[in-house]
Length: 367
Ligand SMILES: *Cc1c(COP(=O)(O)O)cnc(C)c1O
Image 1 (cartoon, rainbow, N blue to C red):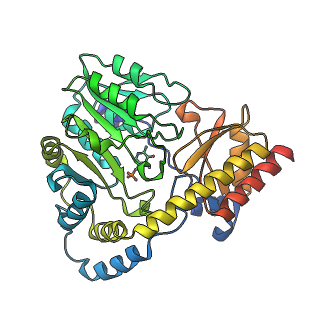
Image 2: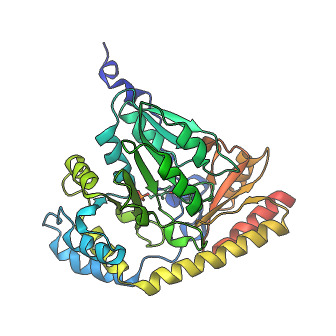
């Protein structure tokens, strides 16, 4: 028996999550200057953090010797007022990815099933398999979640259904009518995890707010994050909102002190900075329009997106275009691992970053 033979079988079968290429890594590989690199690969906020977050962190620095507030009292209080839920309904995570893992730990035993959509966020399958879960993947409809088919895919063994609204990487979304019908069909002993990481960016009138369903659905967990519109991806802070019953269960598997004091301080400060969030959303709206027009001018097809990213079609040459963009200092995200081999995903950047990307793409397509 070797050491690795002793490892948990489910872990041995995992393939690690593939993040976007870091700027420093590209700089080293191609001998580029860090300032010349445009990273549009991880749906990060191009505006930089809220100045209020930086001030709050500077203040919090003096207390680095202390453990953070393991219950996140202040942050939960601000969130509960803003979202009109009880603090006891909120679970804080080291990023909202943490919450996905808590739910799986609480519900998924060896051989239990989780239902996901084709082209959905990769972390769901990863955390489920970690616990020995079996992933049922439901074919997408027009790149988006087919909620009817997802409800129909629930079996006696299903413990959790993951719904991403809007979805990453496709940018597709489900309407209120679709989510209403879906939730009504899911058995009450099955958890629905509704991932709203991009909630703030969506403007559609019939886009539902997951929190509105909580009073009728004690089996629902809505997740949101400070990593996107709130500009704090590096600090790792997100949260789940659910029934108090589910929050209490998650709290049992949550590592103590899973959100550090700098993250708590920055999140609290950014929640109070409405102007920053508004500006982030405006920048995204403008950048999305800029990229859509840019793609049209290049005759490049794209999938309509309500997130802070967009997938474009480069059939037969996605790998080549990805590599070509890297050589020009532009990092986008390959999505072949999401069963989208003919697309690439680009995050919305600043006006200048978007221009740099479009020019680089143009020269690769026409050069
Ligand atoms: C970015 C993203 C998240 C957020 O992850 P964090 O752990 O909060 O940084 C969650 N779900 C989806 C679909 C995402 O794209």
